[in-house]
Amino acid sequence: MVSSSVKDVAALAHVSIGTVSNVLNRPEIVAPETIERVMAAIEKLSYVRNEAARQLRVGQSHAVGLIALSGSNPFFTEVTAAAEDSAATAGFSVIAGTSDRKKDREGRYLDLFEELRVRGVLITPVGSVEARLRRMRDRGIPAVLVDRVSTDLSFSSVSVDDVAGGSLAASHLVDTGRKRIAFVGGPQQIRQVSDRLRGARQAVAPHPDVTLEVIFLDALTVQEGLAAGRTIAARPRSERPDAIFAANDLLAIGLLQGLFMQGGIAIPDEIALVGYDDIQFAGASVVPLTSIRQPSRLIGASAVSILLAEADDPDVDTQQIVYQPELVIRASSSATFDAATLWSESLESEAAGAEPAADETTEETTDETAEELAL
Image (cartoon, rainbow, N blue to C red):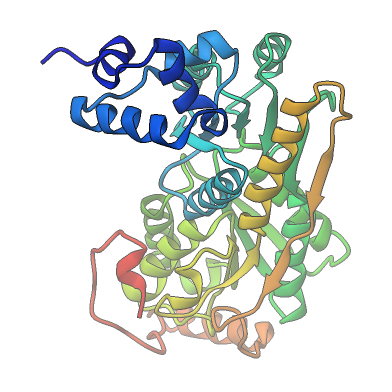
């Protein structure tokens, strides 16, 4: 079936093409009875206007492009939802996609957004992307970095102080008496991962009796956390960490499966666990998860506000907004802990030639999704 054109609408409504255009774009200057006649013709013909052609004529769009780093991480889902709400309030729509940490996929989305002449782009970049974004800005499409800071401060950004967040997590574990902390995260090339590790190292440094083991993984997923949990649970008790700081909550939930639900390791009595992001599932997991909270909705809303301001005035100064994270303490790290006693018990048990029994065992589960860890 051939699509109807604006010419067809004009003919059926017995008006000019210009009048149809005014009804669609400036109805306030058109008589009510004419608007009614044109809208009736549009409905009868099932006419849908060519938005791309309209943008070519007026030079701008009522859409904002958004590229998230991951579609599986609820943190980015919440950022995107907040961006959509904020954009809708201002009369804009959001065209969203995920790069899945793939540079070529990110590039294809940027190509698409440029073709669509979106009002601006929100992006959590895979790597260095400033040169491409600078070319787009020169063509009238500004960009704001989300959960990143511009390396040369030439672009506005909205992010969280991940170094401070890593320090909060490790300091909490030290304060509860933990001595052998493991940081689990990766890939290490991801800036958030390296910043959170840097913060943890800074928190541990003043305590010579506390060690920090680093376990790098290939991805920040439940599956990677599950595998890491199984590996840690298989160690002799004296070689296990007594606390784990996971680089995000998805890893932490996977670790909880591997350690507690499959490995029979008591959380937090034997190993305390802290995640990062404070996603919705964190507080509802089988052992409620201590986590570092990021203001995800505030990040999304602020990014849209800055982007639309720059779209309206290209000469406005760039902004670097950095929010402070918050420690949310739950059951996975809240138990009173005596490291010396547990260490002594571990050595005695291993000297006797047997692994100590776990304080608690549960039926084995093979589920790898965060949702089914909820109560």
